Image 1 (tube, rainbow, N blue to C red):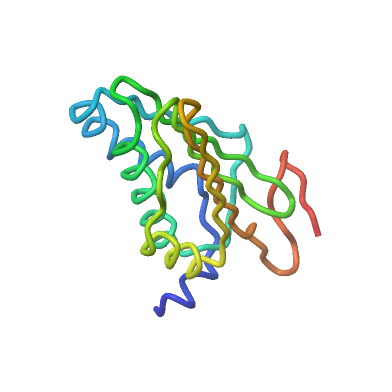
Image 2: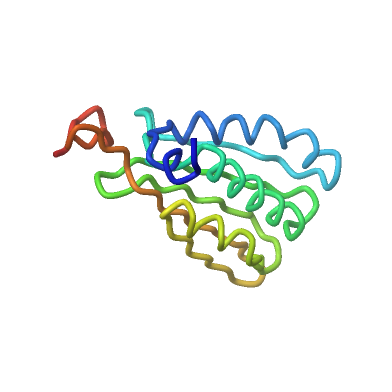
Length: 149
């Protein structure tokens, strides 16, 4: 299956993010005493994106955040489902300004997503990733258990 075809498959973004947090938490703690946490909507956040691309994006963003976060800090991944997008925010508690490399930008483009980086010295950084919501048979499955057309 080509990456273009894979990009059309609906995936549950929070489950994938949970796996990334589980896989990276111990290393973040050992390296810099940084705690990774996940907060998600009680409803599932279905996005139309390649699972491989999304996982690579999240791993890269978490890795960047760990490098720039202050030792003992917290990195929170927050996921919400809205009718127009699945939004994943990665917040650093008080680290330095986090640069985003070209590889991440290329992956975001491949995923048909957008990435906003907000940062202020001493206040931390926030990456906001917006993914297209999952649509099947003309029906959008997203927010609060409701079905949107």
